[in-house]
Amino acid sequence: MALPRVLSVIGAGQMGIGIALVASLRAKIPTVLLYDRDPSQITKGLEFMDKLLAKDVSKGKTSEEDAKAAREKIISITSSSASSSTLNIDEFGWARELGERGSDMVVEAASERLSIKEGIFRALAKNLSKDAVLASNTSSISITKLAGAAVEGLGSSINKASEEGKSCAGRVVGVHFFNPVPVMKLCEVIPGLQTSETTLERAKAFAVACGKEVSTSKDVPGFVSNALLMPFLNEAIMCLESGTATRDDIDKTLRLGMGHPMGPLQLGDIFIGLDTCLAIQETLYEGTHDSKYRPSVLLGRMVDAGWLGKKSGKGFYEY
Ligand SMILES: NC(=O)c1ccc[n+]([C@@H]2O[C@H](COP(=O)([O-])OP(=O)(O)OC[C@H]3O[C@@H](n4cnc5c(N)ncnc54)[C@H](O)[C@@H]3O)[C@@H](O)[C@H]2O)c1
Image 1 (cartoon, helix red, strand yellow):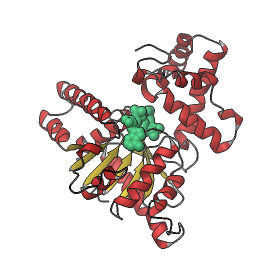
Image 2 (image 1 turned 90 degrees about the horizontal axis):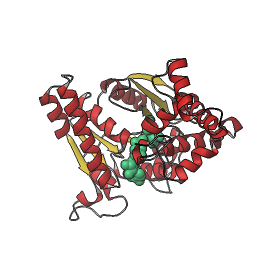
Image 3 (image 1 turned 90 degrees about the vertical axis):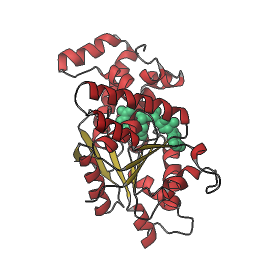
């Protein structure tokens, strides 16, 4: 199955940076475009990528030439990098630029909010080639819904059940990598109701080329991975909230008693981010109306306070 020649990654947060890195270094995609609506995220993310590559080189895991080649293939796209002579710098300017540069696959890794992702998928469907695979790295949001948003991007005259509508929605798929992307071995692939076989196979081939094992989940809230993981993290936060045990004892119990590499509060803080934990938990709750998924009040308060974990300098722990 053919791999993309030009991959676009949307969102230069912890996931987008990792996906751009494995796509360039491991899958050897010839061009990787990296877009974020906040240019400072791209700067920060690429600095982090340079550190990861330097560490790999110093440990002998990657040659200096491979690291240099991987880095050179990554091109940043910001609204200000769009040339005003060829592009209208409007809200879709970035998507037009990705289309003009020949993107044949996109992995969207922007913040876990439905309205943000729907806006991105509308813009992608409107501006990218009709053959491009439109993938989302969402942790919990319905792929079927994002595929519906993509069809809306073609214009209100397009019926979602028409051949054109089905063909557009058929190119949307979930490719759920795990954090840190260069280290974690799994990619969960999620077909929506409309996803075509070809799109599914192209998504799997891409994940394998990035060095991942693939698992498949139905399009249910949280998919298999977060339908299992997130209630567990939420329960750990509820234990803290109710005073059942201290932060350190909750994490110690799971590390030393159950053999987990880290405790659930550390996992939420360091690798997932508490804003993302809350967003996933809300998707599980709203998608099922099952009270077992209600988000912990403390988790909501932490996010209200802007204490998102390592990425903001404070969560359950200080960084
Ligand atoms: N953190 C994890 O462990 C993890 C694991 C798997 C999947 N995910 C999913 O990956 C996605 C990204 O998560 P993250 O942890 O990298 O988040 P993050 O907060 O580190 O990064 C999100 C990035 O998206 C950018 N962004 C927001 N709106 C945008 C828009 N309209 N256009 C372009 N960029 C935009 C932000 O500026 C930010 O740089 C989410 O959907 C999340 O659920 C996260």
